[in-house]
Image (cartoon, rainbow, N blue to C red; front, side):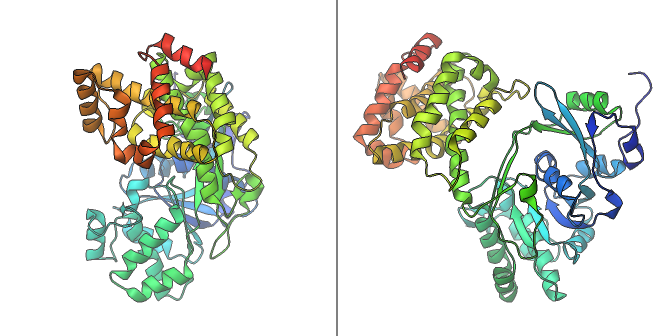
Length: 489
């Protein structure tokens, strides 16, 4: 590109082309009111964008991002004054520079600064995107044998885990007579706020029961649900960013244009006016989680298994296959939506239309084989609950069983081809497949014996019969047989 481009920063913001949106406020007048633990791509492409919009009207909600492991994000963003570019993926990509992150800290190297920021009276909200593993849970409770928790409990004043930092900050605030902040989980796990609250109280109780009681009474842990496909940043994105900005950005982020954030309205020290910028405030986060799981994640899995059998590679490819796309749309509208208890005033038709548009976005290359991973964990929560509800209502489940049968065919093909099966139950699935092939057993009956997957449904004659029909309809699992099965459903 000839002469090396200058770096994105406060000093170079005025060099951005008019096509690139930029912070609509004076960053110098903002104050840090949010500490975010786990400042990865998803936070910077999702929650930080909402805060960026809020700051034009409420300057007290700037973000301090904390990395709990690596210094990479801090080292990339510090020379850029926390600024970075976001590419919204679509037929015509849109670019904007996000200014909400005013400070980036690396916890292992700047522990004192992180704790000081958590104790700052201006901080009223702590948010997290640390993935489910970062909560160190065993079921619904904290795993007290987890190495990170064991280490933190040995000296709670020098934490390393997310739970340890949240509680350490609350401990300092209590000692100083400061009010407790709210702690908002933005990770996609059911009852995320409830799980986080129980983990923090349980952790604090191990060394200071009075602190645990204070947290239980004073702190707030609202539940939330987030949704937006955010592909990982790579060198191709950095090149695109430099072309769009005319400036170097060490760590831009990208996501689809669609973004959803649903938050329970339960905050100790106030909150931003999020509704103004599209956030849904609701007391029924479980209902939104259920809608996403069954109306978004389940069709995703349906395309993954049936699309892979058809020889397709990406979700956009699947949506370009008229027979499969038609089946998925009918599945959502006619067989899933009627069997889901949806939140009050939830517009299922609009939600389904938005999902189908997202699936068809060619700019988001979501590979079907990635979605197909961990089927033994996904099938029960994405399909079997809907099937059980349909059975209870006396409705047909034949169409709902076809993606489940597609998973069994996918497993069979992967194992027989000697391909790696990315699934926690891979040894069990491989053994069943090999035994079925060797002894010419009924494959459906053999897989149904997996109690951890099918549970009590394996004893329901209506489900067993429907799954047999669906598996038989897919024939040998080759494209012609699959297409025929999809056509008649």
